[in-house]
Length: 411
Figure 1 (cartoon, rainbow, N blue to C red):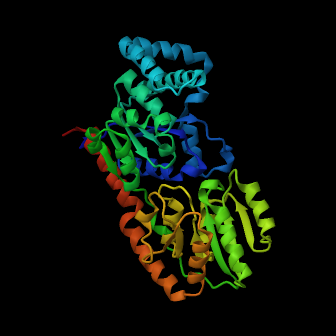
Figure 2: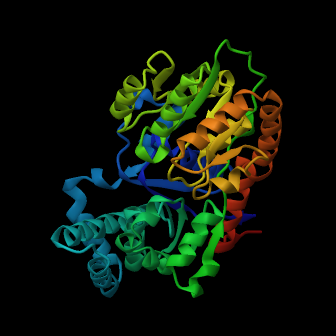
Figure 3: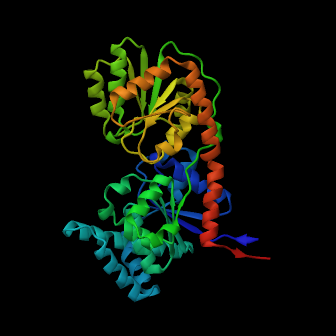
């Protein structure tokens, strides 16, 4: 029998509504025999009673660095200094200073990250964990780099993109890649970006392990609605391109096409989208649902006729996988990792980001061609089943941990 080492999972916010895929990953690794302890930089802002049972358990069992007891903070930092190599602790302070963003604020933040790293090391000592895995290449990854310098733990990341790639120098991506023992990227696009910003000697440690979804997104055939329904699920942010979709729907309505659009999600662009809906006279044609439960979103997949995600910037969206698996024909954009999921004119349509005319033409084509919709749907479900199956990709991730972290074999 092999005893698997414990893993410490660090995320900027866990659990979180937009990080369901991390929750699935943690639970999946535990099912495969790994002890995964979770730690979050920031608390989950959602009320406990608003979460389902699994999320409640994760929220209660996750250590939050920014909620560390002030009464024990100094004692725990001194404990780490005492138990760890003092030279390593001093070297971590120097490293934090070197990796800080320019200016006084940047250096003060770097010291705050160093303090978080000290608390993280203390927590890992208490949990008897020696491997740290960080989701995203943001400030949490910097905390991970400093924790490794302090404690000599092993370190890995999952890099999603594209946010990390917008500020390569500020995020110190090259230094983070160099410090990691190994790295998982959710797409070949993300891997290529890390290769661009890192030394070739570090490329061998960067591996592609895709996200995945449950197979139960395959839904029974939907009943035809009176009005053709277009669905878009995602945070209401400029990066998702929902305003482009609104303009495309308005253009089609002016040509006499009857359409209904459902925008599902919440975010900072909500007021702007409502204003745009009024200006385009789409109040009777567009519904903003706000945030919905997983079950309610699945019901939207069942009721819609077409899924559109007109993003300017993406990794590989899980909602796009879910829509494809549920039997919805999909339209998205040629950005980042999306072309690894949708092959144009084979299992969906890809249009240039920000191109209202191209998007409206693609929507019109699929509205008017039921056979093409069926063809896209069949191919999309095959793609997701082959490459984005959650169980299969969790097996691959677990194998990565096994290969790099090892285990102790007992008779």
